[in-house]
Image 1 (cartoon, rainbow, N blue to C red):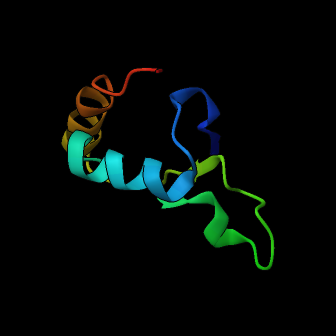
Image 2: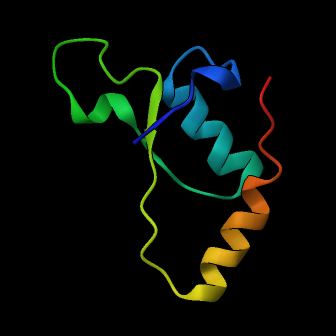
Length: 68
């Protein structure tokens, strides 16, 4: 789980959509790990269980994600 508040998105779902559509890397909205509150609304969960080549490609793609 990582803090996404510095990227300027309204919430974790908007961040996740941007990451998938514009960067090509998937993550899980932090709020999906909580019920009944806005906890996790500025967090995203990334899990890296892939081949080395896939991880290198994800790292290159994530370089496109700039703090707003």
